[in-house]
Length: 451
Image 1 (cartoon, rainbow, N blue to C red):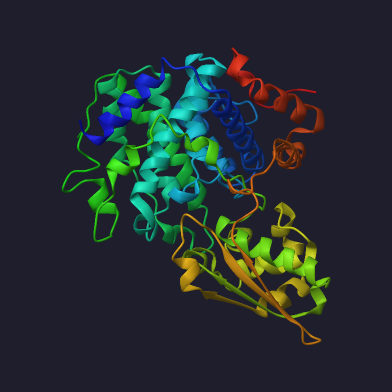
Image 2: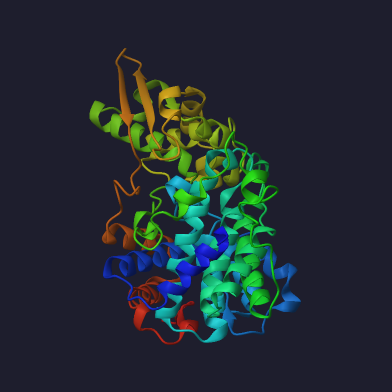
């Protein structure tokens, strides 16, 4: 069997299995976290601009945009997927260097609504999308991430797998959906090395591509079933190491170990490569008992991707600010957190924060780099004006699987992000519906509830 056929075989076999309580709980957590990211992103660009650009296609269809507008499944997947990746608070699969929720859940919810599927069917599709795509992402490795944005490339597979499951495709058509979507896979890291709206569009386009590939496969459109492992296929073309992806390893634990239980839920509203430095700086500041204006100099040692992706020196826009370790660490030390307010104009122009960012040095540590992507660590050193120099090694990030957000902390994150968009009572109504997803029959209620 080809690799896509083996992934399809897993999906078909999983249909007859009862979802374990732990896996189900983590699937609900993933959906709640997705809504926490979706709602603030739905009321700003690029989602609002996409709605204008595609206005003649809106207002019809059974799928729903975040705030309730009608749309086709493909259009809802595109706009909601983009919105869910905009404010940089969506989930991460650490080993795959990948945000699976934005594309996978956007595609699954849009098609589930359009086809009248139940909440239980939707959750099963989300699980399957996560399990297949995270393994492809991990197999492609850091060599793929050198040039490509995995949420746009690998996200296509999560979206296609979830959509194929909701369409109840047989094994061969499921495999063809995965084979076809491989050729739709696209997203370049250069798109977010400067101010740009392209990065969230990567997630939306992946969600739309997955829906399209599955719908096409349902009608008999075929793909090259050896597209992943073939001589001119996905693995060899898009992973630039001396050896191609280890597809056997990617399949080894499929159906036994569920990656959806190992997600990172973000605790800061910025690029995940900044997190270990932020966490380490805040912990060191607390242990030293100092204030931000006591700090003379900051030194952050991290893995190479931290500098390559989040090394913007002098950010001028929110998009650039979210990808600047120096700015994010400085604003954390100055204001105590890196939430959405950190990227408002007044905060970004704060003289104290800017001055501290200019006195921050960012370097690659070979030892820390060698552990990436399995470990996301940083070493932070603070020097004070009175001559104290202390250092902290931050081995992980708050929100990672080995330091997870509790259910309560996840709810607090959701409430903080959803309430300004929906209002307090509607936000809590939606949260209750999300925790009860496995018993929901009508998924069109997963939009903005009325007070």
